[in-house]
Length: 628
Image (cartoon, rainbow, N blue to C red; front, side, top):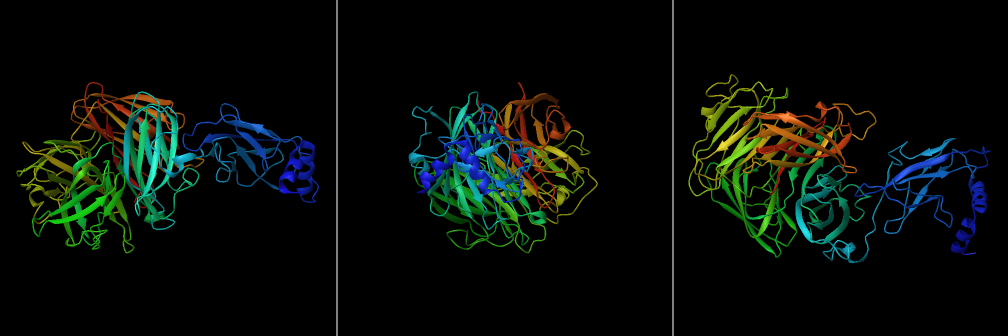
């Protein structure tokens, strides 16, 4: 008898199948146990429940043991079966359009089994992967799989996405996409390899509600069955139905060698991008590789021009040719022309201008994480496409938060004439800081200068003398919001936030707005049974008022997109405040949220700080200003 006929014979009736199970059970006497297997099923990408999934106890056959309800739930009645609790079992799920999937093996108790009782083995809900069919599986079409798809609304570009880059504990980059429009949207997500530009994965997401987010961890083999390990990708996310934004978290290492960085995805590029602070082996530690992604429709010819802070040495120009949607890196520490920037000088800082015949986007990673570094740390910032005479930053610090947190500020002159910008420091609500202002010496065109709050104002570009008392020549210890003004000029600025063990970074904004979108907020996200304020990832918002005095903050659950909590924050115009998820009992711990910040008729800026214990688990990303 062939295997097909055997399977049909075995599963044709419940009686015969039960007899077969009895034969498979060890000779140990088995009690006639009655119980149930219960659980839920969800889409691995949208996280929504899946109805009418056929559920099988063991290999799928003619007898369907259960079928999922509208909320994805199912119950298998075990009363017809005599089973031994020491025997392993598997449940299979079958539904057209999804990959047929089985659970890991589990052991039933005398009352059966509950999905989620050992979540590392059999989670609840259990995720099913939508099957890619036709040309979409090879990334050769631009549609959404819908025969009448809505028009393409917007695109988010993520220049640097990785999966276990460098080994099992190497860089991986979860990303979050938020719907910033007023209608549901479909997403199409495409991964392109750095090495040859080929598209290795494309998947679809349906029904992302306004204000809510979709997330993906490239290391997740359920969501990403096609991605190779130890690889680097550029990602393009297209939205059909509503505008979107995206943020990327970059992680590497474990324990004391853990690193965390975060950057914003791009909805538009520019032919010129500015990088205020690029270094080669600064203090023998810091390297700043940056990644350039082509957002245009044809091949980009790109040059990156390096000018030293101190004005010495020639301008170094490094070329790249990049296909549409793809990305290429430049590592200042490398002298390989295909990878690095030969000609740069060790222990120097450079202002960089990236020029292209196609719109491009750039992400900068600042890293001090060589094997010889005892406490590795890193941060990420976006390349800057728009300068202004006045910039705003929602956070700066000196000896803050009990860990000596401080924030060097680097200003780049984008104009044709020299400028002398002034930084105005306003204490964050509740901070011990004192209002103050620092005026830079002249900054030449296409160059940068740095301010380090640890040193007295008068010695910033000479002896770098530490100061601690505050006063006319010294910034007092504390936390601040900042405004940087260069009358008649055009500037960009990067804020680096450091301690001895951690680093974060963000770009100051030239565009305060009445509304900001924050794709990823968490309250002790730890995937653990008893989350506390010191476990997992928590994400205080740093909110800066430009003209607003009342700000409404709305928190949406990742799963299902429901509004979890709305509250109002009062802030003085020109001031700033920290909004910590742990301040609100209405928010559930061990959960992710997407957030909308609304200043009403007044304008604000917002950034999100992300913290977890251990190593360099600290990062910041910029909020996304609403586009009218």
